[in-house]
Image 1 (cartoon, helix red, strand yellow):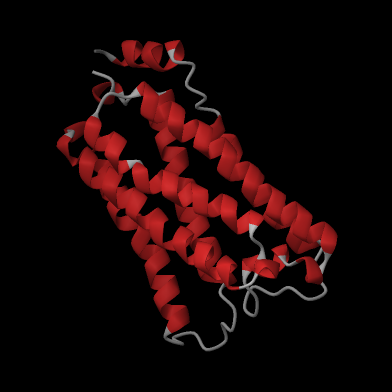
Image 2 (tube, rainbow, N blue to C red):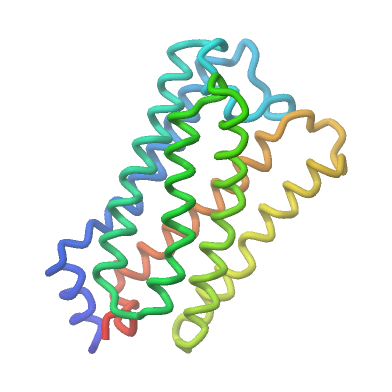
Length: 212
């Protein structure tokens, strides 16, 4: 199957590839707006991003932040489901399972805000732990394809930037970080970059081997 037939495969299954671009932008926009509405108290060094979703810290900001996460998660579920339906490569399908799990946790972060208590911490940890595994599973699975080695290596290495930031925060390597917003946004940005590369590969018809 050549590159054109790969695109035709995605087209005939109405693969909503654009959601891979738009959905993360919704999350980033909601975070940016929530921060703008919370400039009187929010700092990157002293807060968690989830503080923006606490209704006691400001109702408009919390609604925008939480809604943005929920909408992003739902749209990415549509994107990932369509992607899995469009491909036939079983290892990649299996590799997407942690991605589905991560998206469910993302939705729950918005639904179960800090006001929900300890359950919010649980779903937040679930999201930040599961997304690296999504990248690793897909990355190792795609090592079988020579043309996708570069993406495989990126998928394997990228999560370590996030891990480094989390370890730095938990061990006090940067003592001026009393909050975890910085490692949170690092994880989010690595995940978004990874998704955009997948969309770019799809758009250029470079995923033909996954549809054969």
